[in-house]
Length: 299
Image (tube, rainbow, N blue to C red; front, side):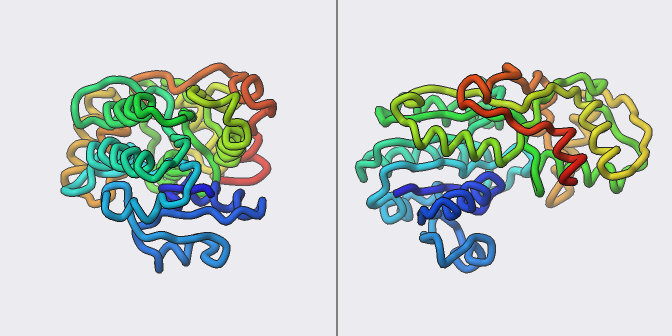
């Protein structure tokens, strides 16, 4: 049986839908069962109340489970607050899950991470993802780590944030000149990769897979695609990274849901890319084109 953490999140919802379509009945770890029942197909999954940050709830969640798909992470677009920060969720949550999994005899954890994971300053988003991966690698369990570039698909947080900006702002700010490279990958393709990893544990065990779409886009080019898809025209304005960072910090301090966080700013400090043939080489299929998908399917 498969347990999915973060089942009501962006990747989690798509993962649940695909498993159900294949006739599986996954167990889903959710904070609020009643709310989750309005998001997930409650009659076709097993909903278990709990959270990776609540160790006492995990014993029941992992009982009888063979494999965990771990997608319960606090993403960089979310504001930190008391009791809800990167270290507690992304580091502490993974640690709790590993301990519970080992105690219950779980065989394997597949972790959904992200490109650019690296050691960083304590308490930071990048440091949290790095430590989460490190703990899993050193856990003694079988594991696979999947690191996708930025995701697209209906409701994708990164793309939605940019579209909201286009819809409301008079200009498009190009952080650092808009030169940072991204490799957008469809959430459906990420789920296909996860399923292929689950189907072939012998080949994918104890490996890290970095994946992205079939094209590179600068941040400026991402905006070009989105402007065309939304039928909007906005002037693009150079925005110095330090200045935007100050603005992000101010917005975090005064807004409950800031359009940009200081953690999200880290995504602009490196190129969020891998090999263009990463998916086709490692998993045997060609991922969807960001531009072509938006032209045919919309945002």
